[in-house]
Image (cartoon, rainbow, N blue to C red; front, side):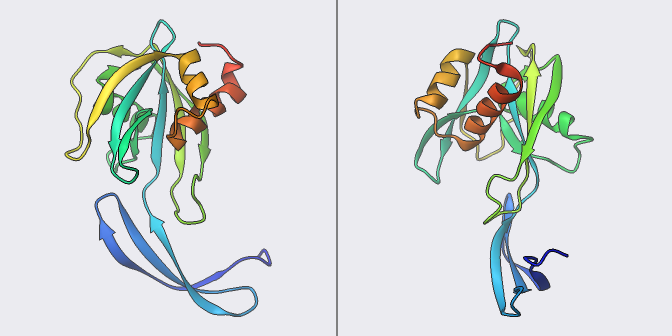
Length: 185
């Protein structure tokens, strides 16, 4: 056991709402101090960087109540119980939010984006040869507009601080570092 490990002595949900819970853990710190720690308890999520056959990226403009504005971002959503695997969840989220279907989906990376306040894990996927084939199936509280943009334009928006969606920033920079090296697929 690491000497930084906290011991959880009790755990309970203090608040439940659609999409996440607020959990309270009673913990014992390494020095023996007993205290509580609250965090957001939420399911894993998938984030999709979807490329069309022409190399454009399918993006969404979505109202974000927490920041009071429309944000440009990528299709993303929670992994659901019916999802057979994470790649299937990525395909489902792409289809539901955009109406696009991917020919191929591959894992890019996984990250814990806010592990100081939440236990969520985001699994990032690249989807290739995405074409519009069907109806969208938005959740009741989603306000989304679908568009396409050039990959270089999306990258420039990230680098110029014009795009604020953290999941999209992570996906684009992760793609650049692993696969992109400054070029569209």
